[in-house]
Amino acid sequence: MSPTSSTRATYTTTLLLLAGLGLTLHAAWRDQLTHALAGVVLTMIALTAIILTTLKRWITSTTAERADLADAQRAAHTEHDRYLAARADLEAEQVRFTRDMAAQRRQLVETLKVERQAMQDEFARLTGELSADATAIALSWIQGNKLCPPERQRDNLIRFPKQTEEQAPAPQGQSERAREHGVVRP
Image 1 (tube, one colour):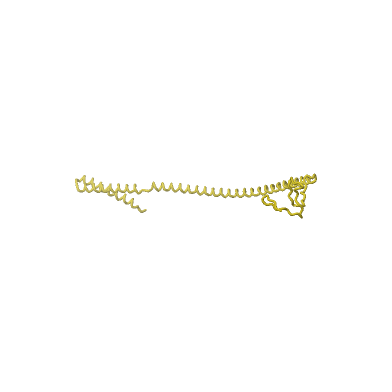
Image 2 (cartoon, rainbow, N blue to C red; image 1 turned 30 degrees about the vertical axis):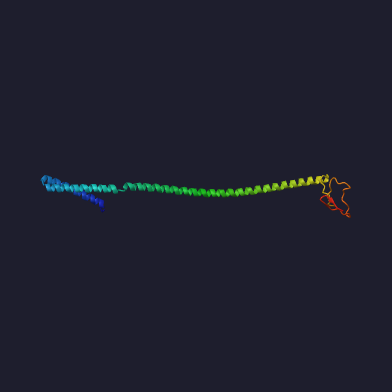
């Protein structure tokens, strides 16, 4: 198993920290100021490296975000599955509704045909009854002399109601006098 760069950095900083602490303690025991100062510097460098590594891990750590992302992906996948199921249910419902509407339309067309035929038969029956009644009434009027055909006139003369014999029109052989503005001329 090969260590990752982060593991190697942790090993290196731990080793550096231990070396710095060891050098500082050894120099303090032997009373060597330069070696103690070098040990303190090594310890500070190791602590700085540890702090920086920890900060880097804390800043670049995506485990919580990955867990949140995985949860969100699962939720989205579940929602997508529910959406697809609802869409399939809706399409099935639309197909059923369309099929029901077509069947109902066919049934209504058949009902309307039957009703139209019944109405036409009723109309024909009523028309026949009215025609028979009208014919019977006309026949009874003719037989009772209440209805006589109009007599044909022989001439087209207009008769005035108060016309007397003297004012009767002249026979065809005589000519009438011309009358203009109330003046009579021979």
